[in-house]
Length: 314
Image 1 (spheres, rainbow, N blue to C red):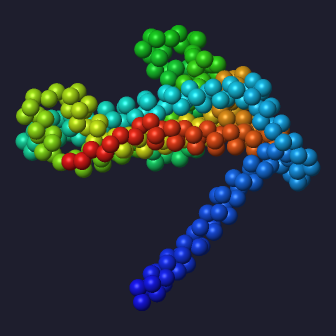
Image 2 (tube, rainbow, N blue to C red; image 1 turned 30 degrees about the vertical axis):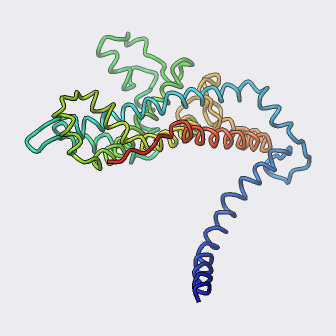
């Protein structure tokens, strides 16, 4: 009888899993396998592949100066974006939840914390199209641009010689990075705030009674208890750093899909799309897609492995 009930239960669960598993295999796993297969051919993206080239596309990648430049730009984003975003989000979350220290009702955030939380989260709800329009106005290369106007008003630049911003080879990548940080901080602030609010207030009260400073409270109490959330944020930001396609393609100069000036803002995703749609090198673009997949997967596993700590209970 027990065996029959167990068998019925297993069949019931299996029946419910067949459909979603099949959909996942058809729309996620199979396209990955197809991409890898096409990367071994000279596929043009239109007609079926006519010639098997093996690993030739992969050998070309690491001799391609534009691809290597794009890989370097993604690496820069990968180092800077998670660090800056997480540090700012942790700082603001701490101030909005604990920064007010002891009040009449115990530990609290700074005055107006609910309003600041809404303001910080606002960029997260804006679509990429709105971000592009906003920052096209902010980064305009003439005196009518927002940043140039502010700098000229403060006397930092000559109004007759405005800064080129997105047209500057040295500044363009950092302009894109600033947008990514500005957009992402609000989301991770809310994530870390929710984690902080789950920490019992008695822990903060005990640290105050022991004379702990804000820095000690953050480093020795907040950060260890929030480490799982920080680890998750790091994985998502690493994935975002390996993409950045929409902003680069829409904001930076270039004949197709941005990446300029002189490929100084090129990222792997924009170079992939240019080869696939503009140049007709679909097999070569598929090889780039496989490389991006392998790098992203390796980074995610590395972050999860090297940031793993024993869970802290309270």
